[in-house]
Amino acid sequence: MCETKGEGHHHQHVAVHRNVMEANDAIATGLRRGFSARGVLVLNLISAPGSGKTALLERTLAQLQPLRVSVLVGDVETERDAERLRRSGVPAAQIVTAGTCHLEAGMVESHLPDVDQPKLDLLFVENVGNLVCPTAYDLGEDAKVVLVSTTEGEDKPLKYPAIFHRAELALVTKADLVPHLDFDREQLLENIQAVHPGMAVLEVSAKTGQGIDLWLDWIRAKVGEKQSLHA
Amino acid sequence: MHEMSLAEEILRIADEAAAGAGAREVQRVRVGVGWLLQVEAESLAFYLGAMRQDYPRLAAAAFTLEEEAVRVRCRVCGQETVQEGWGFSCGACGARDVAVVAGDRLEVQDMEVLTDDV
Image (cartoon, rainbow over all chains, first blue to last red):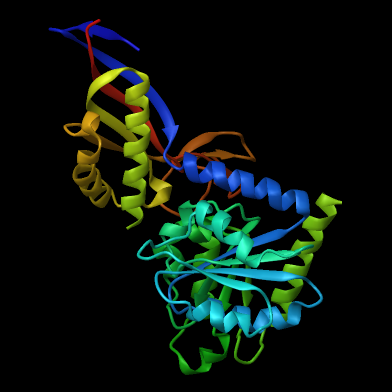
């Protein structure tokens, strides 16, 4: 701190150097510690609105038994997604953000008791449909999974590079629609690799079940990995 | 809307730091904006300007948003280089095995404040 004398006041330089995300990150760190102590895997699903996050989960949840799974789903308004997911027989709760375009760690913390269960293996957090804002908010997850549907175009990774760079896995959804679209699959895969060299990519269809086995394998391997660390 | 949440946090941190320094008035706050975060600087500046009124110490503060370039350290040759655009690779040897070491944070860096004479 350096000071200069003025008239009746001091002019001071104050060094701050504080991360703007500090409050969120502190809660996320606490969540991560708690999940790790219990061996719970947490996956944060991020995509644009309408990429098929909820449809994919509907397809996924039923097939994950005997794993104990819960879901938190964020939306700007309505309880519709949680209602859809509860039909799969797993505890699911809606986080209505009322205008906020992303989930924050504090929202996960306060809604977790709504879906928590003894010996929980896996918590899915379905983020608010948005490719920019959710990227910056750590929710205490083990991995971010980004979804991009075949109807969105090949250039999504180049337009929203931050999420493709940070996510561990990319799911190309609505793969069944490819024959009906002017969709350049090779170009999309190339664009993903340009932003995140070596990124794991799975092409899936919640409608036909294409690629779902590989997605389930990926999840089960991650759950196993997390539980072996906990044991 | 993302920028509104960020503005709230910046104001909270700046006000807390100003209180800690015994400041009467904050004149300038410097914020480092990592390029990787894709923060809309114009929108962030708008919210800071609109919401600073809620904090008496910050009501006349000017906010300087400084874009911070992305820097990567190469895991192959060990060099640290500035990253231009997306498509992460080492600026020295071209290897793609790099770690981001700067440009991925949003940080309240420092402030110019006025304190009362004691």
